[in-house]
Length: 183
Image (cartoon, rainbow, N blue to C red):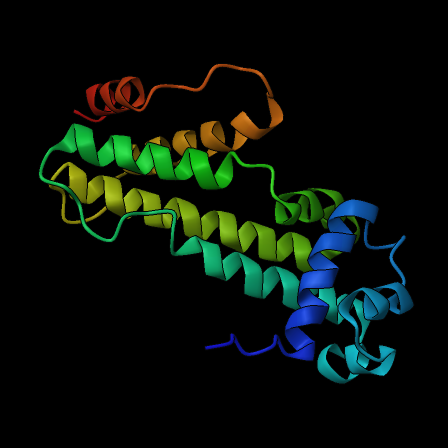
């Protein structure tokens, strides 16, 4: 059975992700976006109101989709295995230089709403990682040490994307260090 064709709205979002990452928001015209998406230019304004509305919808929709993949839903009984799996997921998702990462880094300075959304996403990640670490250590709620560990994990996993060629941190080593510090 054939897959249904992507809607015009979905094609516009896909084209925006590719072109904003490649050329930048300011250097990408709505005419170019429409041509890349294979839609009439007016459809961009119909779905998103403005080009900035498109940028904000792109960030809102594509960032929420990947947030669910960052933290495992269940905690394995072995604390080392739990933290190692968390690290692998964070390093894979936050350490990968995706088009969305490039867009957020490049455009946040010029778009306060985008900057606020990026902060909101970052805070959500820290909260989810803190809660997961609390469950790993058998605590009912995250304590300041869980928040500190979460901030370090997120920062370190994100930094792997800006240090190409650096050897990856082994998940077991990360788990040992973190659990010794949380203990």
